[in-house]
Length: 298
Length: 322
Image (tube, rainbow over all chains, first blue to last red; front, side, top):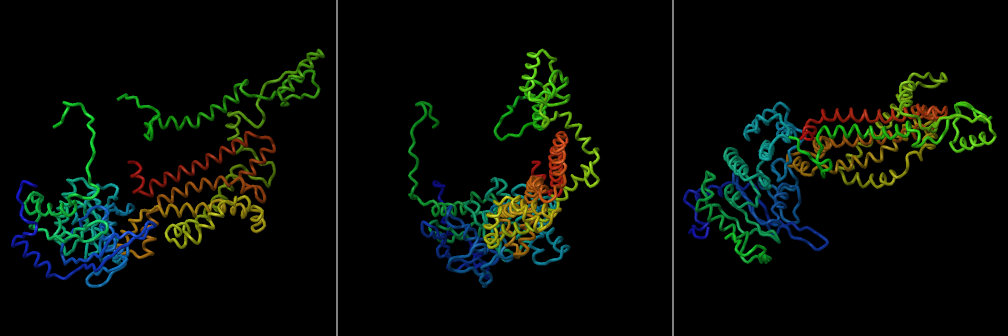
């Protein structure tokens, strides 16, 4: 990455710049205003999130990235209504939200399919909660199962599926409710790299074809750049917004772009933000030579 | 193919052949020890059964005498030059040999009751099972829902569990006299003892099982628009039901252990009546047969419930199969 002369991560092609202009003209779906989360403990208060402000536009794909302990998961849980903020508010379509609801679909990091329900019935769950008749819910659910390419497994139970398939069902289950925004909390974190890349491509495909806004949490830089329109970089202790980066990599995205100059420039910037040089407590190892002289590997 | 794996490997499953042979052995081993004590004379056999009275006047044929007393009597006859008694070494009457108990398994069922008012063995057994059934059913009807509520809502838990935690230390039989005073001398107090013995443990165990349900399943339900009632009915209950079923199987086993005490309360009834009656007649083979029967019935019920469990929870059983 160092020998290559990279363009600035801020430099956008005409096409990309036009796309961002169009995006920003769209209405805001989710708006976060002055969000604070303070955990009280016996050793004193811990500020997990400090003055978070941002908004997402309709059909935008936003990734949130940051070092571990920066409060990414706390943030998304507050957005979903599973935790309440100490201060500040979350607006969905301009209305404040404090309780969880089907208007904000969530895909969790762990597998949260209901093990006692078949794939089809898992996807039907939200529709039934809305009071939809079983027949309608079933045909509707099958469309979503089809969309994630798992119609063959409609009658299987979650334990019969691989990790990637389970998360595809989780996505279908959240989308079946037709939420305004899809919240994803490191959904592919437990998958192997090949499956993960496939899932990312699938997700972009789904996102392109339906009217959905996505907020996606990850700690993987490549994943964030590959998926996002904008990346919200959080800083740890306290969790604060460090920068909101517009990704200059053009769409449609493909895995070949992982080595394109725009991609690498953005990645370099993220590296600088997340692993700043001379970081505290990073003094390296004190190594003692434990091999024979002449037995060198280099 | 014929790789020799050690018998003792930490947390590794045994081959099916080994596992099955050990299962059989776990029953054969106690049976073997019992047989050795019963059939090998010099192991224990502290008594002597008189065969020939000889010169000892107070001996009678078939009498069981302590071995030491028998020997001193023999010495006496030698000293007085009278005919020596003859006897065989035997075990005390309360330890019948395996084959005697095995026969008793059959004869206990075919022995007519001594009095008209008394019950046949199968009637006694059925009566015992019905006492357990009603005690356990009544306990579960109240205990399971209460346990689920305790495990779901902190308010219910804090209101109920501290008292239940206290009450479960009170031995159920202690309420025997009270139960008789309130419920009469027939099945009422017996069912009450089974109930008291089961209920308090049941609430705490069910509450704990409910608390073990993965919270993220509930959170997923919330983000899918489930209301509080729907969370309970559509997620908590189906989520814990396989574990709940397992808990109830264990609790049913505990209920059996209260049976004998329960049946002694008021008028003795059921299998306990049979056991005490047979012990009074010194038919210890029948006593042993009855005790073993309780074990067999309890175990069979549990095995049947386990088999049923594999079929009603398809998402669980196939997970266990691997």
